[in-house]
Length: 54
Image (cartoon, rainbow, N blue to C red; front, side, top):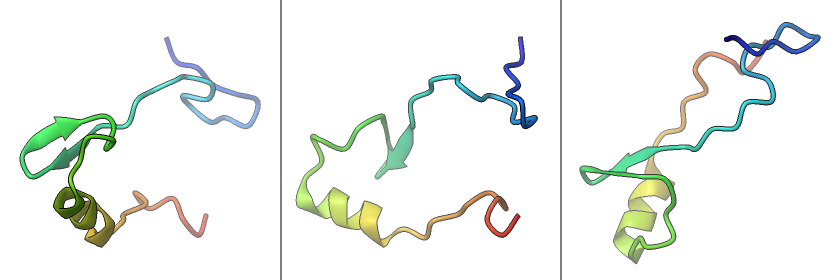
């Protein structure tokens, strides 16, 4: 079932958890990362999926 809000945004109001792949591990949170893994995360190029500027 698709959740669509009044502005036509699909997925509005649906809760989801962000999953990251850092050094080969899939994780939801970074609370157990050491400093090296946190630095790797901070140094990554962020992509917006083409949503910025619209």
